[in-house]
Length: 204
Length: 334
Image (cartoon, rainbow over all chains, first blue to last red; front, side, top):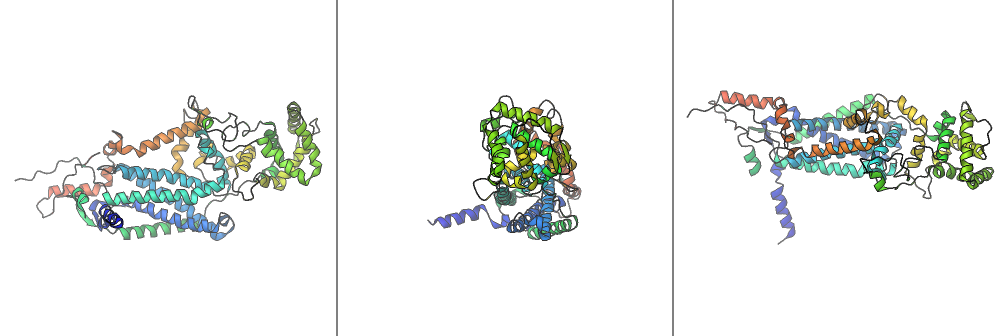
C-alpha cells in the first residue's frame, strides 16, 4: 500500500475542498458582524507585508528615512486595526455563543490566538528603539521578573525581543489563525439561538 | 455540501456567498484605511534617552545615580533575581516566590558593571586615573563607605551650571577624581558604549544600559511628562497623541484599583499577572464552564446580531402557505 496514497485519501476525506471553500452560506451570515473575522485576517496579512519591508531594511531604517517611517506608520496603524477587528470578532462570537454544537476548540484556539497576538504586539513595542520602547521595557521587566519569566524572556535584550517579534511569534499567530480558519470552514458557523417563540402549529 | 454540515444546516435557508471576493474586499478596505491613517497621521517616534543626554541635562542627578550604584543603594543594587541575590523586588504569594525559585540568570553587579568597570576601561586611556582607582579598590569596605557618605553630603551642596557640576571639597579620598571621570564618560557619550561592551564584538543586549538609565530619576521625570507612568495608565499609553496598547486595558486597570494597589501592593506585579493568567484560562475554557457557557443566551445580545434571521422566521410562520420551505426550529444549545 502506497503511503502517499494513504495520506492523500485521508487528507481528501478530512479536508474536502467543498467544505474548505463553500460557495454558499446560511443566509444569516450576510451581516456586517461576520466581517470582523475576515477584516482581522486581512489586517494580519498587511502586518506581515509591512513587517517584511521593515525587517528587510533593518531596525535603523524607520528612524532615519521618510520612506522607512511611512512603513513604520503603516505597521503601527495596521496593529491598531488588527486588534480593533479582532476584539470586535471576539465579542461578536461570544455573544453568539459560537462555541456551541462542537465548536469549543475553534473558540479556544481563537482566544489563544488573541493572547499570543498581544505578546507579539508587546515584543514589537519594546523593539521600536525609541523612548516608548525604553520605558515599556524597564516597566514590563518588573512584572516578568516577579513571575520568574524575566530570567528567560528578557525585555531589555533587543536581539531576543526582535527575534520573537519578527519570526517566532508571528509564525505562531499564523499557524493558530490557520487552524482556527480551518475549523471554522470545516464545521461552519454556528446556528442562531432558538428565538423562544413557539412554531405555528400547521393544521393537518 | 458534505454530510455532517448538511445535516447541521437542515432547514436553514442557504444563500450564495463569495468568500474569495469578501476576503479581497476586506483586504482592499483595510489597506486603504491604514494607508490613509499612515499618510495623514504618521506614527510616534520619541527619540530614546541616552546616558549622555541625562548626564548633560542634570549632572548632579547623574552623579547621584553613579554614587548609588557604587555604594549599593540604587534600586537595581537591591533588586534581586534575575539580576542579583538581593530581595528588594522579590514578590510572592504566601511563601511562593517564583523569582527566588528561578534565581539569578542575568547577573548584574552595579558597582562593578556601572562604575568600577567603566572607570577601569577609561583608565587604560587616562593613566592619571589609575592611582585613584587603585586606591579605592585597595581600601577597606568601611573606608569606602566613609568616602561615599562624605561625597554624598558634599554632592548635596553641589552647584550646577549648565552641564558643569561643582562639588565642594570634602574628605572623600579618590572619589572626586573618580566621579569627575564618570561625568566626563557620561557627558561624552562614552558610557552609552561602555555599558554595551562585553568580550564579544556584536551586541544587541541593552540590559545593563537600560537598568542604569532607569536608576536615574531623569528618566522617570521624562516619562511623567509624556503620561507614561504606571499611575497614569502608562503601560497602555503611547507617546504623543496616538493610541497605545488599548488591548492591555484590563491589565492596566488592575494596577489602579484595590486591593491590588493597597493590601497587595508589595507583590502587585505578581498579583496582576496571576489574575490575568486565571482570567485568560477562563476565557479559553468558556465553552466547557457550566453557567458561563450559557451566559450569551441570557444576555440576549444575539437577538440584535441575528435580528433579520428571527424576523424572517416569524414571517415564515405567519405565511406558511406561499411555497416557501419552512425553517426548522433550531434546538442546539450550549
